[in-house]
Amino acid sequence: KAGVTQTPRYLIKTRGQQVTLSCSPISGHRSVSWYQQTPGQGLQFLFEYFSETQRNKGNFPGRFSGRQFSNSRSEMNVSTLELGDSALYLCASSGTSFETQYFGPGTRLLVL
Amino acid sequence: AQTVTQSQPEMSVQEAETVTLSCTYDTSESDYYLFWYKQPPSRQMILVIRQEAYKQQNATENRFSVNFQKAAKSFSLKISDSQLGDAAMYFCAYRRSNAGGTSYGKLTFGQGTILTVHP
Image (cartoon, rainbow over all chains, first blue to last red; front, side, top):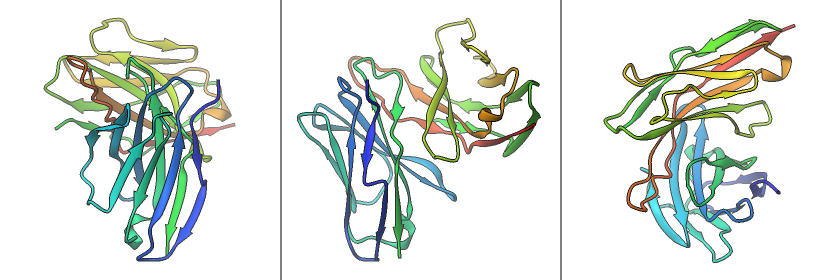
């Protein structure tokens, strides 16, 4: 079974721009969660989607948004990028029991 | 709010020897899950082992085992017969158990422990 995939793997943007990251979960998984990883703040939860509905949201500004499609693929969007948004963005999927999350390889975003 | 603390920023071990990584957590919940994830230089987060809080038996996966002390809110990872490929950042993580169909998908992570394996 293929793992979680994320695209693109690397991204360079400038301040003020917006960016969209994509995540395809493991086949059959309907829950997708997003995390931001930075050296200063560590791993922080962004949001979780299940069946196209946002179920949980972390403590991030409204510039961070996401959605999930009927095929369980998910996208997250960051508008008006700031330098502090430079991070590794990790996506994870879990099955119907929600117990264990399996992570993708991440998208490295650099904001200049 | 739940918190996870890893008090060892760095650890090192000789190849073939045993090392234990520490993790403590704080929660008022009685049912939850604990995880250890490994993140090598590739940055891919890999599940190492999982423990359900309602199970008294410590989880084991090949060379990896945990010492789960629920009353003490402690969850340490023991790596036996360490290999060069075990070198990575290790994260301890907590997740609430689901309730009434509600998913608490949020993982709360510790700060991580960098493990170096010396040949």
